[in-house]
Length: 143
Image (cartoon, rainbow, N blue to C red; front, side, top):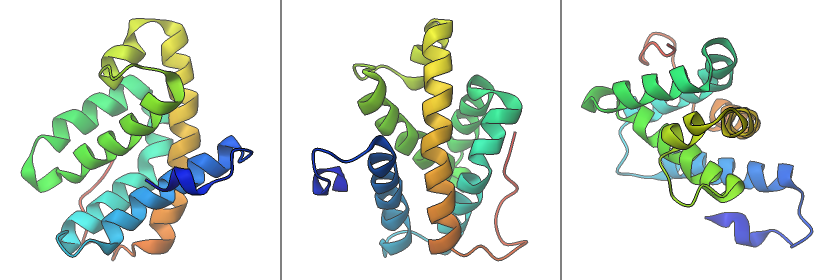
């Protein structure tokens, strides 16, 4: 993605923002992505930080995995992947499954929760700006 465009002195917030921007731009700009998927992704991204704060990282990830396995809600799988890729690079997960890694111990869980929320706040903001959602058109999000 675009992280390599940053200087070596770039802050962690700048790296999060650039990665989130890249994720949203792919969804927004791809001609292969249907409007329903685009809006569903944006709606899910908008609720993601609050879902984690309200329900916990584990429950939110489990919801995304279950919901994302259905074609109609495949955007949850994309959201999962976007978050997993970011956390894998930030938390040295060595390619492990995000949910399994986070649940392995409480230290992992706390680190993953804090970093997930920090990243998803950027993703949420960019999705709000770049992918308009017409109320009533997108799937209900949340767990």
